[in-house]
Image 1 (cartoon, rainbow, N blue to C red):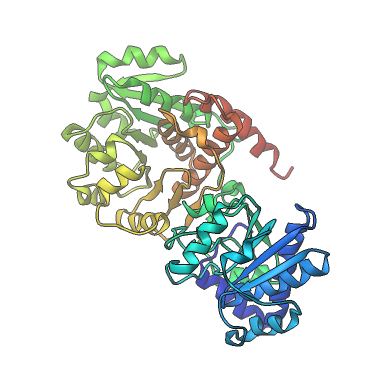
Image 2 (cartoon, one colour):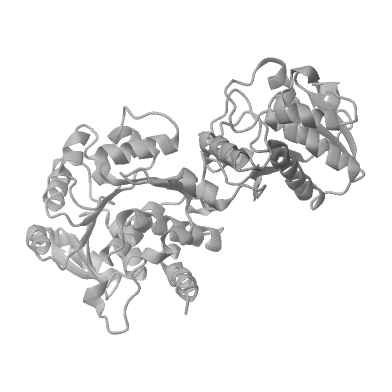
Length: 485
């Protein structure tokens, strides 16, 4: 279930499944059954209130109410509209419910020990306001478990954005595949625990829709890893140039550590002569070269990858160095100062990008480089990748990676400990090290984000950037041992 479907694609999957012979009420029954399974596996029978909206999400609620009551729960059901306004499968399941249908109001919440949100699903097309907004505030203020069906009411399923106000769920149960809003902030936080349940939509039906958005997972890029051959040598694993600053040396030293740990065969730090002893003293495996030799180094095709930007400085020199190295079409990672230096002339940078290039902005750097691109994070990343011709990675708790051809992935690992100085420099080094070994730029960016996030989650409290490269051999070993033997 790695594919992520937009709400429109999910409607298409439902339609194709029904056209293939599975009745819509069967899908609705399966959805309600899945939710009840998740509820009863976590909580003992108690007083529950099911809040139903006017569409199929509300129809799911009628199934859930019926099944919970059959399982011995005390259930109250509230409906946003009159029962006779329901249509299709929702109307059918309303008729199957033999309990009271109450007017939706805060009174329904009195005595509730568990609340099921079936008001609006992922396709919400309105702002939650007025009496419904008041009800949402009341629901959130209570101290009882909140279960959202599909997505929490108020969360846009395609963007994760809040439409007015939104329910903050403890558990969200969705069906077939996740939506973008389950993983993009702030929707990701409001979903609580996310469970994806099969309700009878075939995997082939999903494949026929041709989704281009995935959860970032090793299954997406494991086949693209260039593991060393038994008869290989260090030159087969690439030679990365890390272009370092004259004074802010820490950033490039982190780049170098990460790139070497992830497998780059050789690494040379290129910097002003006065700074080279600092870089050389960081590790005996690092080579150094004066920046005046950058052009000669790039003429040697064995120097096949470059990382520039971290700690390098902002200004004309940075721009000229980047234009210089992009001319050679090496695998290139541009981060930090390399991005900010083009904030007043981004088109110059995009015109110069000819070879495989990854841009790794945080939100501030993105806004400076793409000031006119607006929308949710996924939309912006895709638009930026198409415009620049580079793979664009917008960093954050919900990191999005987008390729120029429209492919995209969202990081789903929770690793708040990565919010520390130098963490982004390590990420750039991992990407550069993977590209040096021959990995496709999009796959390298995705794998690097996964390694980075897993390291953050594994190490946890107390993490500093220097810890991340040390943990890479553990994660690479897991990936290596998972290969078919």
